Length: 496
Ligand code: BG6
Image (cartoon, rainbow, N blue to C red; front, side, top):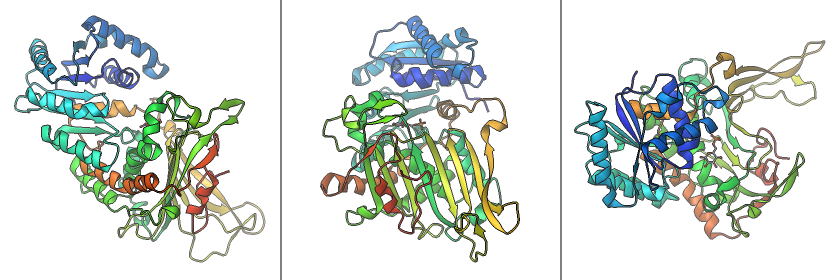
């Protein structure tokens, strides 16, 4: 499918996201011939920059962040797509000039329909004013071409502000015009969860509480908060990673089969399963949630600072950099089995994965070499790095006797070919241009995500008795995490 001619109006065009992610992703699309023709990228920002200077900046951003180490080709035809217009998105008077400029560009480049994709690479406080500004000058109106808007998380900072943000945007744009990026949905391996489940017949029959004992969803990072301490200290890992990315991943693993692979059908199932998450209460939070904050440590020769000593972080901060949750999905498929969700900064390794643990055989007469019961079957979906899928099962150890050892069938995406996995932004920008919202978060799913995390945030804010455990940088978070596993066991890659 080829996207129709359009202008991509990029708010925050001289900012970090544009340079690091968006311009390289657009370049990759350009190189693959996936961008529409004609196509223009209109940078918007408060700084006065000429068209030529913006094109040069885009070229410089590419040289620095683009092509994933590959040689840059055809940069000049790509940078020829760039234009720039000075605009302060908070100034409601500024949008008339934008509408005029866009009208000129549509005409000059002979675009028959006046299509536009507005990418708001802006602080979330500017989303509503920008939607207002665009709407006021007719740029939300779809009578002479499609008009779409891409926004990125955070979608609010709690349930109330998340709902208010949706309401504000929906006053100006329709739901089908709003594309909320959750870059985890743009990851190939997250999409492949849907393929694994629904393109095959062997997994789905056992994909339920009768055959699965529990699920784990982990997103571990080795990095700390880096230069984002100011933002992160007001957010914490529950808002930063769980409310959005990990709940979307969880929904992909647990949703019912959609009736079709389209935006409405897939997102209906996402919303339904997120709605089924059992709320955690102030009374039972102790059994369901463990939070932690990293302490200084020397990791492989590097002295790593404690979270509280990071730039932008309050010296007495109680913001969590680690959270582990024992969740439940109250529906027929998953009722009664625990679902463990974990995310943290400064953990020992960078890994995002889903582990599906199957039940033990109903009658067990084999033994493992070390005398333990043979491990149950597991299916590990490695989202990153080393993208792949691993199935673990027991087989007889070669030799006399009948002892069982666990073996694995391991598929690596890298075996599929040389071509690098496209970046999430590449995929999502293209889908935005094509008008396919399947991999974008719908307003109801965002709100269900907030409904799940809000009681946890409230309990933390009001109950000083809820511990915030320290954990040394480079460890798997607080050992107390293990207490969530009431039936025994612990997270894969156990806490040390
Ligand atoms: C972002 C969070 O949304 O996702 C960051 O704000 C986090 O804190 C990042 O580091 C992780 O994304 P990825 O793609 O590197 O796993």
